[in-house]
Length: 398
Image (cartoon, rainbow, N blue to C red; front, top):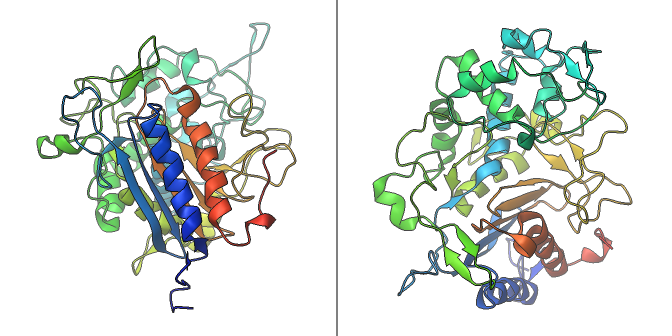
């Protein structure tokens, strides 16, 4: 065996035949017209063992341009773990504590009432705190329960939410709402810097994430993948780029992602830092204990994350990531203890600390159907663990 743990038939414990099967599956999805393009990356033991790009940037062009491994994709909510990482930088500096009331940083939220199922407004049984804000359990409703909160700036969002009752008692439910955008507001309050500048200075620049951010400059637009949709016959067509990305700094820079863009290699860099316990290429960003806390379940007993009717049940949630717990009904091929998230337009990733691996998939679809991030992540998980030697010990989602 070679020094890097590879043989002629394997690379870092993955069979080359298994990796070829994975690539072939996603190539088939493109050839069958289910996807316009997809870029995938698998890393193990700190080494990228498989990096593949297939399809085109825009299916509606007469001569489509092939997608590449450095193509830019809208990652939407995959910006949330990045914001969580920025929050933990400040946590290590003592700028906030898990049990701090959120109103310590946002006085407008002091004394928010809770709306019960019967419509009656009652007091908070316990004051919502920062740990709950970091784990979507602070009491805010799901995003669809509010009007579009991204039409103004972050202060406009706070001002509106300060007029609304909480949707549930803090800590007693999990709802995917504006919590991470609120975190972005708190970062700005604590640091006195715009969120995008803080993340650029503390994470993107030192990590070498040269293609990540809220703005796509003119020099990079040719690398941007179009969003795609399907017509009434199920045929793919490209959505015009106008309005699908920021050509200049937007008024609303949400910690929740918004129109953030990245590449698979950029996202691997921050994911590898997290998998390494806070260190990357000789530089330490976070303590190992801090990173472990980020992917340790902080939900109260009886509170679980459920994503979709058929997949991903009984999940835990840490400080920025959903976590695959050792439960009988999680319905995922991802390994126990892996942690992950996805984006609105189909991007997805997971980090598996037990097997020391990272898997990332990028696509951009408006109407996802059977190619949504959760379902496509499951396709990739089955193939990733099927290609990993010794995978019989891993989770069976059936």
